[in-house]
Length: 448
Image 1 (cartoon, rainbow, N blue to C red):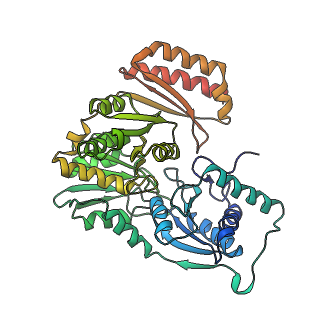
Image 2 (cartoon, rainbow, N blue to C red; image 1 turned 180 degrees about the vertical axis):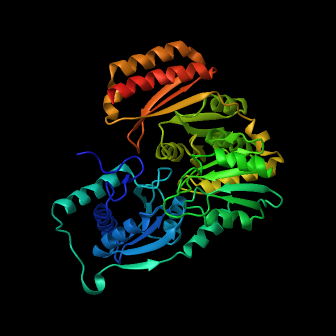
Image 3 (cartoon, helix red, strand yellow; image 1 turned 120 degrees about the horizontal axis):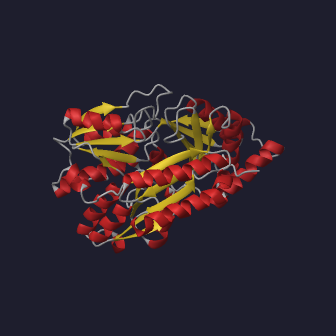
């Protein structure tokens, strides 16, 4: 039996793979686990993005929590990092986010934060999964009755607490800055406009009218072309794009160029190094970081450490070594002085603050790093392991690496959240790396 939890919670197609029945069991199991050390009703905070299936799954989670004698605190539509912040702020035993991040609307997910605001370690997820499997087989766990039955508290007002917190992470004011903001029709659609309005920005909104099925639909950080066009049309100073649950941020500079996570890390690292506030002058990144990122950090007098793909691995390294800045090319950036997880809103404010403090435009800061051409192909597969272990695939990779030599690199890895194998190549010649990527992808497709 495969593990229930993936790299970022439990995900699947809503009402097909991720059913209300499974959500109920997860809510019940989490309450039983986190309630072991609680004298009162264990409190579990629940937030969600704007997907049509969110309310259905939330209702099932609440039923599971209440059946085990817990108190569900529903905060409504709210960014993922807000849940991480609020579990510490109001001292709940755990937090739950209902979101599939950048995935299409028909997918959804359920992920957990502990009472410390951090995502759960694998061992805790395994304990919760064990309880879920037991409930599936035979639910012999206690069922409170009478006044001990769980209850629900609705606290959409807590969004204001999170907005106040995000605003507090910068000392700058953005009066006179023209900003195009794309909220991906997702979880940031209320919070981020409120933040930027408080800070004085001249705001032009996109992706701010969710209807349940338009989350990430031709908008947000995974579909950034429309933002680029709007920045150029409006002659804006910068464009900001979030993903569906707002734990990521990508930007567009005033010339229409992408500012991805690598560039954001470089500009923020420089700002912190100049102020003497970057521990060991070190940034934590992943194997997906562009070669240009590595060159830029070194040219600024900094250093970097590399982890596997996934924010949990970045954060693990940061906490272990006392680093305060890390992230991914995808725009998932962690500022551990402020947050316990990636926060797209805080990231955006740090980029804007870098512009203000340096008195430089977004394009000038963006030019701190030169991006090497990079090609990424997502290949849909039925068996990720078979694709990885294929001799033909390995041979195609080896041939590509030999051709590129020291001027480039190839990375082939399975997605942790989708039935995909990702093929990435990087080097000075885009036509060359496209050809190499296509050859490897074709071999993976043969395996299926």
